[in-house]
Amino acid sequence: MVSVNTNYGALVALQSLNQTTKDLGEVQSRVNTGLKVASAKDNGAVFAIAEGQRARVASLGAIMDGMDRASSVIDVGLSAGEAVGDILKQLKEKAVAAQATDLSTDQRAALQADFNALRNQVDQIVNAATFNGSNLVNGSNLTGGATQFNVLTSDGAGGGGGRYALQGAAFLDTNGNPFSAAAELDEATGLTVGANDQLEFTITSGNETTTFTVDVEANDTISTFMARVSSASDGRVSASYNDVTGRISYSAAEAFTVTYTDGATPVSAAVDDSAFLDGGAGTAAGTMAVVVAPGSGTNSLAVSGFDFRLGGASGQALNTVTSALNISTASGASAASTAIDTAISALNRDLATMGAQSKAIDVQKTFLGKLSDSIEAGIGNLVDADLAKESARLQALQVKQQLGAQALSIANSAPSIVLSFFR
Image (cartoon, rainbow, N blue to C red; front, side):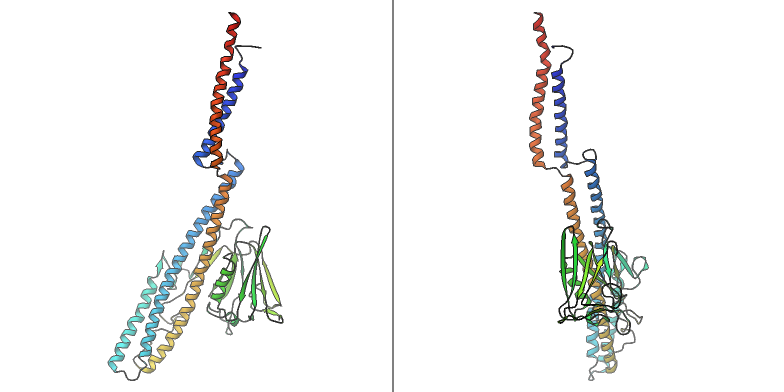
């Protein structure tokens, strides 16, 4: 039937042209934004996932900013400690020089004046070592008045709700005092470390299981051992040490199993009286393993402060360097030299701990940087447009739009044939 009231062909052509125009607008939007999912109306489910991951990337950025601040605080403290170490070397030099018995009274007085001037610079250096209101080396000026602060190392999202950590019990000497980071592992009571002993960290991610082996040697210092844990595991597991409690903590962003193996031949019983692994004393076996469950740890790292000021207070690295030191006599110079040697050892011990803390933060920051990059790549896989495909589609739709307009024009002219019926 031919009708001038209803032009079905024009209606069909118009619907096709409208759909082509809509598709063309969608492609142009993807080309303009570079996104195939720019809003919730494009794909609600994918948009929701992408927004959640964008929020996580932002939180990881904030955590890394906090770790940068913590690293700066530690770096300033380390610089101050190294400067104090240089002064102690000079004080040692003066004390040794004053032990000579052929010095005149005036020469001894000059040495004493130099000695006092150098010693008085220590507190000035230590009190000036402040970054962002925090001083890690004067024992009293951390932000908030605490002696240590916690640094977030994870956003606590994904993988079962946070960070995974295992904390071994305190390393104690024969007097019951916590060991320093400079102490040898074999000196820790309750754990016998020998040749071929190993610590293994096994991490399962999806269908992939990876085992990292860390050699444990009797003459390893705690600082050396912690650095080896991080390097052997490619940064996926980090170790930190609390000089106050004497505890070593192993932590990772993934669940892991840690196994200690006594490598002696023949294999002897590995005794874990100090709870090196599992927090429980008395374990004895050739191999000891502990599975770290999800959410069993913390998502922060404690950074301990120290006191490098002069004085006799207990716990200060320089508690033997007091105003009573006098090198005006040979015997006094000898006593001063011994006191300075003690201070140098204590200072180096504390600097080693601070260095280990800084290294642990650096390892975690490197991991978070890689994690953030991986998440951003994943977001791109979800929402980014393939511009090569969109370019080809854009050209096809432009041609289709022109053809649709031509088809509509032809359909609109179809009713004019009715005029020929009335001639």
